[in-house]
Image (cartoon, rainbow, N blue to C red; front, side, top):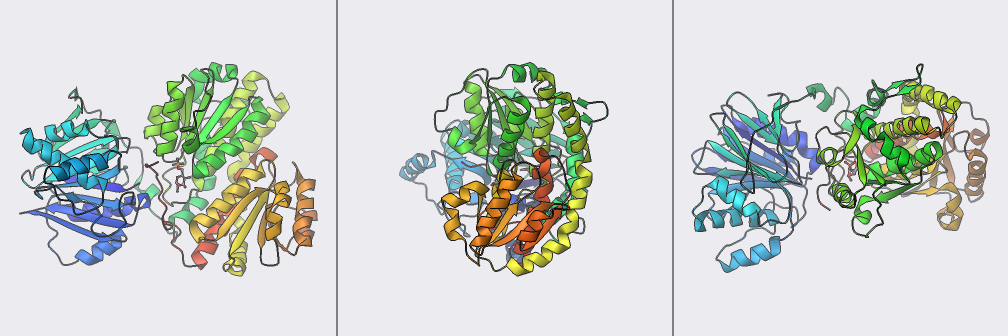
Length: 612
Ligand code: G6P
């Protein structure tokens, strides 16, 4: 959470920084700020979004070829002008932007107050820049050294950039636990939380590693050392991302664009990995770990949010196909509950961003107990991707809408591919089922394309339900995790209270809520526990609940009973969560838009949760 951008070079910094902040706004958007250096260090800040900052500082002197900027998701101190970044040091010579959390900030702050420091904000970030200046002055160090030494006192996570009034040709950056990428131009540098603010200027990047500090100079010089004072050679990589991937491409919102991208993103997640006709699944990223899978007595899946729901679908898939027991854990619970972890356990960590702090901590814990960690990440080179022993990227492309859509379907696709590959080697499923599922996977992009045909119908439906106060989502078997995901999507972006339940559990509580005002979305596709779900629908109808049913095309039974019916193409029961995601995503999207909500940046949320 929080987006940081820095620029140093020959161009005017302000337009580059503002554009960069807009690209990173998905990471947090409760306040924003910018610091520019040109005959003095100027800091401009505003609560609200980047556009609020832009409006507020229109007409002011925004010149300068060096600057730093920040868009915030508040952790310490409410989102207001004062707590917005950048923050000054005591002398106001230094300004800092920060993404992360300084866990020991309270004790450091107390010590600094005793030493005569004054703090304007309630943030942990201001404490860090005061500490750096204090060490710089008292130990008579240059800024690079002062930053390096100070970071040894820090407990927590940081990606920071520091601008010094007295050094107009230099920026200092450092990171631990929060992402940071440095773009290398011709005698110019771009710094950002991810590559999106950088790609239109350069494809050459350096990803800083944890506990590294970088010194960037206008001459094009880049020096990197660890906080323990070990020199490092910058490892320059080429960015593969395309600019079009992070633009809206004619869609009104990123979320709708990403929903519509799914036929392609699902195809990309399987590209080069699957050949149904030859009966091949080839996941290069885990090939060296296949024996571990074959020997594993247990798989533990750790994730958060939507990725956790993908993990739940994974549990059904892996247990059915590989007969290896699977546990799915919220990373935030797993990391603190002293779980039993064996050396022959395989932990699959699922994360779109690859930066989620709880998932990362769960990985470290499992690793320390000797388990094998396999990652399923979307962002290439992300912290989680690097922390795992092996893994496979989802290749869904950048997901910018805060509510996850295409990442979810790509995660489930990959879980299915992995499970099939292991099941085939283990001989835990009949060959015929293996081939049948491969063929179904290959047909998925086309089926998802057809599922998108319901868009207009769902828009009309959304007009009926836009004022609903509550929603219930029901499903059984593979469709139960999807009920959870459908409910999460709706509450995230429309702020309507929604709950997902296994359909049969309804009678143990939620049935008390059902009346003529309660819309109940039931995923009632053929196969699996279809007949049982039919009975559950009858139970809702008997209490005058309003049924919106997602059914398999051509369904005659549920269609007679439900108030509203949405048809999706038939597919294997195990893959229904992928196809049936489409109408659920569209339903929450249209309801949210009709309610006037900001679907791409829902209140209080952030795309990448780098705090626990
Ligand atoms: C945040 C996002 C969710 C996401 C979750 C886990 O809460 O808003 O959309 O599912 O984090 O993120 P990850 O990047 O680890 O999948």
